[in-house]
Length: 227
Ligand code: AMP
Image (cartoon, rainbow, N blue to C red):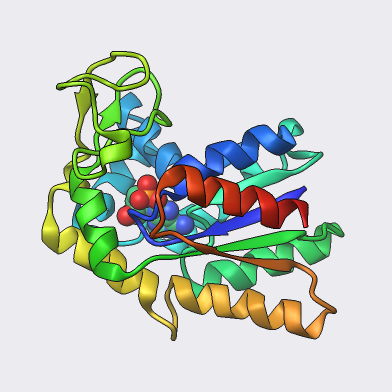
């Protein structure tokens, strides 16, 4: 199963993505995580990406597109993958489409998780990352996933914030890119909706309402994936 997961920063996409990954037993490829891992390890890629990420800008396509296309060629991707955070603009969407067609790979599903911009912003600023597992959900502004004091509600691990999560200007910048229908992430989504409309509904577009509580969103997602 080959899946793209669209949703604004703060929509809970990472959390739902982890559930989709488990359902199909496919790798969950998150561009943001790849960049942050590289920054943490002090690699050349990390050094190059850091400034862009801190400002809430996209890392240039010349770095990001080959990085992801190479990742999709790795062995663990041969039976499927879940891409989360890519494509993030129209060019990335078009380049991915081209590369998949050239490789004879069919994209099965595009998930479109919708969330109002202001709600997404509040959620980002409340988000806390568990040092043990990036996918342990903790948010000081969401009752269902409030941390246990200052510790991870899942494993008791220490929590930290992402620098780019506490910078309102950087968040606005990321959302400007996401909601841009001309060249930004929404333009990439519209591109795939158009591909689907012209190709008998392939890939299947799955709409998801991100404003509900996490378990409800997961239930809606599972129902729609099974439909
Ligand atoms: P995320 O964890 O998805 O919020 O991504 C964090 C940051 O990584 C973004 O604000 C961008 O700076 C960078 N990034 C993630 N995905 C991409 C992408 N597909 N293209 C360019 N930059 C990206």
